[in-house]
Image (cartoon, rainbow, N blue to C red):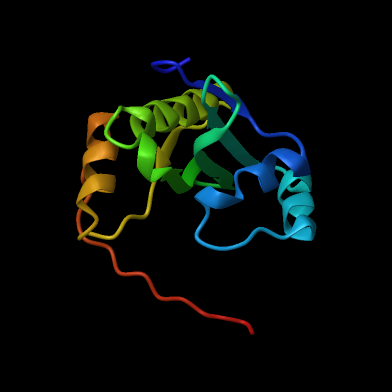
Length: 141
């Protein structure tokens, strides 16, 4: 519970689709099913007292022979009407707790260097700045 919000793990397609208004774009049921079926994928949703999704965070556990298991905070989103209340930090901290429960050795997040609110959220949850990183991407349309 975080200031009137209940944070819990999403475990059904219906829960993932109900949080669609928090995503960058529309959710697809087949992608939601695949997300839930993928080992290491995790979504935590913060619900209002009325049961409305107010925010979410997703993480993906990765493992490498020389690094052990790490959790990547893949995406964090808080509905505009619920921002600046500590909900982003609470979701981040809940994901970090889940990473510790999974025996991850650490966690990391890719974030745009000009995204002040995200940087402040992660800093408030104890993240250290490890320098500038460039991201290159491939799209398979």
